Image (spheres, rainbow, N blue to C red):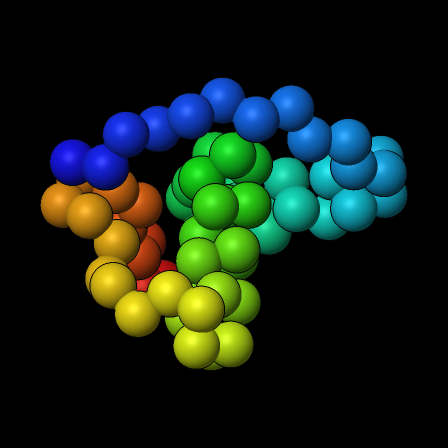
Length: 63
C-alpha cells in the first residue's frame, strides 16, 4: 500500500461544505473525497496513470 502523508490544506468554508456534502452522498469521508477528486483530476490530465493502490479509496455501491 502507498504511504499516506499528512498535508495541511487551507480551503474556503464554502468549498469544504460542498465537498462534505458530496462525500456524504458517495459514502466517503471528506478527506477520502478530496483525495478521490484529486486522483481523478490527475488521471484525466495525464499526470497519474496508476490505479489507486489496494486498500485505497473505493467507489461506493450505486444507489
